[in-house]
Image (cartoon, rainbow, N blue to C red; front, side, top):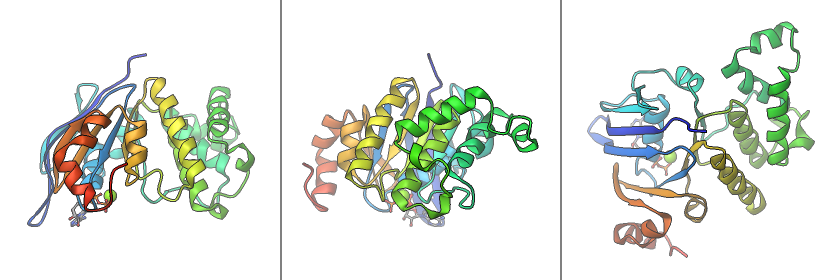
Length: 254
Ligand SMILES: Nc1ncnc2c1ncn2[C@@H]1O[C@H](COP(=O)(O)OP(=O)(O)OP(=O)(O)O)[C@@H](O)[C@H]1O
Ligand SMILES: [Mg+2]
């Protein structure tokens, strides 16, 4: 299935005298995992916010499937299939894991109100199938009925990701999904990202775990001081002299 490509063209975002994103071009292709790496303060989260619509660019444009969405509100973007997860999970803590997923699923597909009114108390059967499969693939079935607020960080991140997947996105934007995950959870996450991309979804992965990014992506952008300094396959970006200089200062790239 062919899904929408997400592109940013000539994106600029300034905060006072600081240019956090400085004339960036980026493409998140369908069916591929695209990585975005860079040191603290490089502008990754700001660029991410320009793509999700949480921030508006001072100049430049964002396109989804060729359509100019630069001025579109994040919620509207989500209904068009552009879905994000947050650095700090934004779940309903007093609800169960399953109910959080239901909100995600039905938010995009509209029978949520019917669900609240009791017409379809557990969502449509298609929605239930998607939720069940997503929980299984993330090994979360055992906590489906647990109150979300009682879960540890790693589980919360996976639930946040599960909720995003339940909206059946065309493009999935993930900011630091691996932070707070242990080794096993990180492995589960990377397997899942490959599978989801295999279904045609375009994924943008922003993470400090450079080894995770290099191992799971098809294409990587490296950002420093608001600019893209290298782009290409993980192997090419890993060998890039500017990238090496930045990361050698923080520890070697294996
Ligand atoms: N709302 C804001 N107001 C002022 N400056 C900001 C704002 N948000 C970000 N910045 C600045 O913009 C620059 C880029 O920040 P950003 O959070 O995008 O970087 P990052 O690459 O995501 O960093 P990290 O790896 O620490 O998450 C930094 O210098 C930051 O201090
Ligand atoms: Mg950030």
